[in-house]
Image (cartoon, rainbow, N blue to C red; front, top):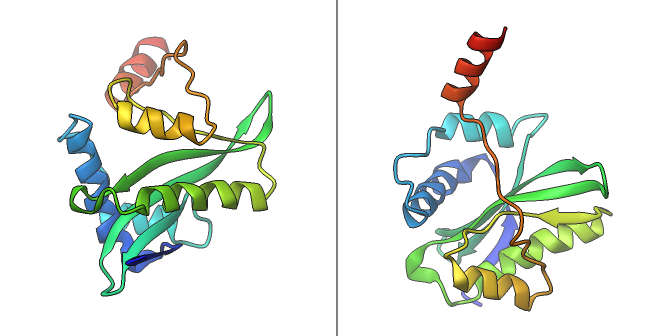
Length: 161
């Protein structure tokens, strides 16, 4: 392997943000990223982190991929992990970094006695869907994701409270 997987740290925040932006472009949402390096450092690498990361790092120190995940709670299953993003930079896809990042999150979940790992995948991302299904993951095609953005949240609160 020309890379290693390790836990991310605050010095990786810019590289993590760059990968998040690259993922947003890939997902056809180039202007959707609103967070900053400071947000990542505060929220992921403080005394009470809101998320964890694994990064794929080349021998020269270049971060080529990352997995960002956090704990959540399922009323059906109990302790669970949500895999928010799994991303390898376009020029390094196909070398196994994504698979190793994915495996690291699953191993973390297993070793820490979580009952489920869940994530979303775009319905047009057939490469990712095939990869996940080949690892034993079940892609739930009959569920839709619902979200309330900050602007609509503000509007709802102003109209209802």
